[in-house]
Image 1 (cartoon, chains in turn orange, yellow):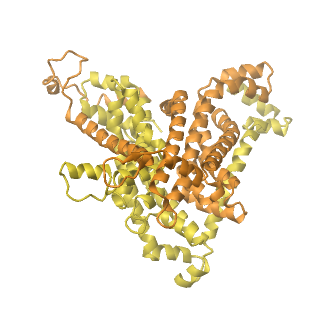
Image 2 (cartoon, chains in turn brown, purple):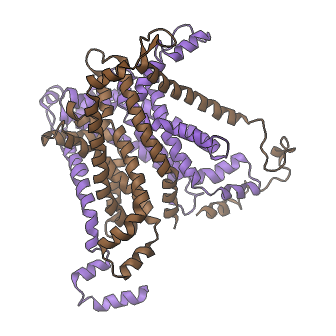
Image 3 (cartoon, chains in turn green, purple):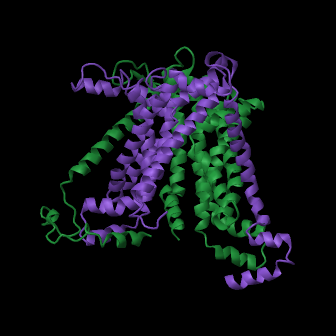
Length: 311
Length: 311
């Protein structure tokens, strides 16, 4: 399809090569392939925008870290003293050990279940043709396309009706709703790019479906499953809206606990306590992200989708 | 292969078992792998969602008293109560500019970061970093960094740009900034993924034929990027559309940033009016669907000719 576009465009009048090429005049002295040292206005514009973005980003990050370490800090550039007591205070006051344990349990359960449910479905969607395939694909796409709160509120209502409100089960169940479709969406293109002749060969040699799965497919799928799991982990740990709707004091994940501390009645907890919790959260997420980037480049995931769609 | 198998199958139709005939249409035992995912999506998505829609036609006594009895009085309340209905406008006023800005700004940045230069990987990681921060942490950081006593205002006053601290937070702009910080990396990641899926030799070919920068962009890159742009706009919009923590934390929750998701949560968590909460959630889905359809219509109308057979 790529070459089509060009061959369709090229006979058009617009792309007729203008013989003298006036644009080249200014930089004519350069050797071909060499870049000019003076950047163009657009480049400057882009870099200025990036700079502003980074000022805000770094400012946001650093001020939270400084705030979590400072005592007291009101109207000066930096706090008067640096202490670590906010961390121990927050740890005791909010029961951080419990909150972190809940967060990890929820995230791990969601990963395991969504991989177990999602990968077989992704395999069928990638390999087979069957009736109603388009409808089913659309069904799996819907939860990803909708804002979480749209289906979260009816879902939470159902959870409360079943008496599951504020329990760990409810938190896990609501987090599964966007995760399973997400695993299906990322694994389908991944499976599509595995050569089907390998499975055919195994089946010809008499391997049953289960053996094909455990012996042939699993080893090939491990990188994809790992990538999908890490992305699900990031999403689940960061998921606020859905968890917030059904969680209670004993089943709050870290994000929700921070939010509750910020909006607690009476102006919320001391700002520094919240900052230290936020730092813990950020460090957790960054460790996950660093690990994730070692295993997966999100760029490849989408690029594969494009390739597989073309043929 | 086709002709002989079809003829063979026709000849054996009368005697072939039912399972054989079904298998020829793509139905066999391996489809069972789809069952867990289907049960999951039906139980946790379709059922709660249809239950929620049903709930919207059973208004609570309080709503019926104010807005008249009848199955539709939730919807009457939604459209007639200006306090609720205004939130549609307030949400759009935030989400649309943010989505447009994030997508438009990430195109040039993705282009710049596609070139090779020192520290490219570091810069890319830094841009993507805020994805891990989450809205709650960004809100906390913004409150400290851009608050009245924050570094940003302190710096602006020190260099004499302003005399009074600028109100960056607890208003419309605070939410806007926080949405850009969390949404831009996401848009950038998607756009650069789609951009990397475009074969650079196509652009090189256009360059060889004498197309200048803007021609190459309009006639070659943009048509190829259009599907990716549409997807990115939709996902970025959905992300910004369901803002909830930032609207509450860095916004003016009762004034200029009283977004739909806040209203839905108020009805759900504070007034325990589940039917009304579901009504607002369903209306959120409708509004979002309208915008998504508009984006898709724009995409199919704008580039139908030049993209040729691409779907």
